[in-house]
Each structure stands twice: as C-alpha cells, then as structure tokens.
Amino acid sequence: MITVAAGDVFTDIDAYASALAYADLLRLQGNPARVVLEGEFNYSIPDELRHLGVNYDKTYRPIDDESFVVVDVSDPENMAWFVDEDRVDEVIDHHPGMEQYWHKKIGTRSDIEPVGAACTQIYERWLDADMSDKISVDCAQLLAAGILDNTLNFTAEITSERDRSAYANLAKIADLPDDWPAQYFSWCQRDVER
Image 1: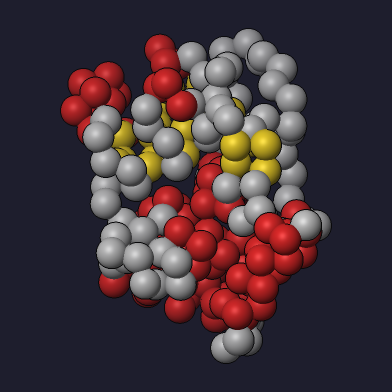
Image 2 (image 1 turned 135 degrees about the vertical axis):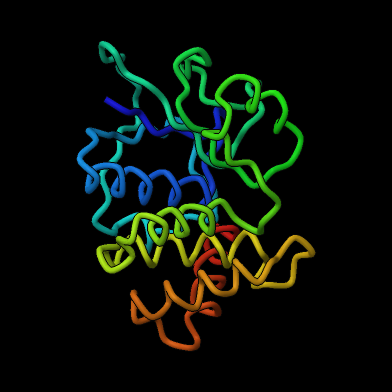
C-alpha cells in the first residue's frame, strides 16, 4: 500500500489536491494507494471544494509493508509525523532547499523543482503516464484551484509557463467558466472572514 501524505501542521489546497490526484493516478496504474491528511485544513480549501467526490483519511493507521509518497513538502521537519523517511518512495515538491538530501536518499524519485505549485507537477505526472484523459472533473477542479492559489492567480514570481499551461488544460477538463478564478478567491475570502 502506498500512503500519500503532505505536511504536518496544516493542509492547503496545493497539498490537498496534489495528494488526492496523485493517489487517483497511482490507483489507475494498478497501485493500491490511500491519502492521509492529518494537518488542519486552511482557508484555501473552501467548503465548495471539500464536498467534491474525494476520498482520504483524516487519521493515520499503520499498514504492513506500506511505503510513502510525500507531496508539497520536502523538509523532513515539516512532513506528517507518521512518514517514515526510510520508506519514502517519492517526494514531489516545488519548494527548493532539500534537493540534495532527497536525491541522496531516493535518487530520481525525488522531484523537487521551482514551479508555482505541486499541482502542476502532479498534472504533469498524468501527462507523462498518458492518462490525462482519465482525470476526473473533481480532481481537475482541485488541481486548478491549487495552481491558482499557489501562483496567486499567476502573479507570484515563481509562476511558470508550466503552471499556466497546466491550469488551462485542467480548466478545460473541469469545464470551468472564465470567471472561476474570481469565484474561487471569493470563496477563500469568505472563509477567511469567518
């Protein structure tokens, strides 16, 4: 069993969407996978997105012979408490700083690179697997939200052409209207004001 996890303290939309979408891809490829997200969900995951058809565990329970994939975090100090570094198969993150550490531990299964969102990297995994036509509408919407949020609607300096391209393709899959970015950020603002 592959357990897909993220950070320890909180879960934002980038981690949430990345974990869920990557677990879906792993399962479609014939790998048993589950998502465990114990970190507190923050405002970037509004109610409208929490109710999509997603499946994850909020509490960790060990499974024999499990391995781990960690998304949207690569510093071991910030990973979910239950992740056993010696059983990490993959790290997928867009935060620089731990590239050498993970390259020594797991080699090319470490994917830490400067793009706007981990969601972009996950979408590219679907493309590389030639399975982008199998992304669910819900996962496409979640990945699109993660890209919007992390790139600050494509205004953050770290935003890349890869982020823009991934968002455009995901918006088509999810049939998102042109004003969807404004809708998403208004949902987040409402939750912040609560």
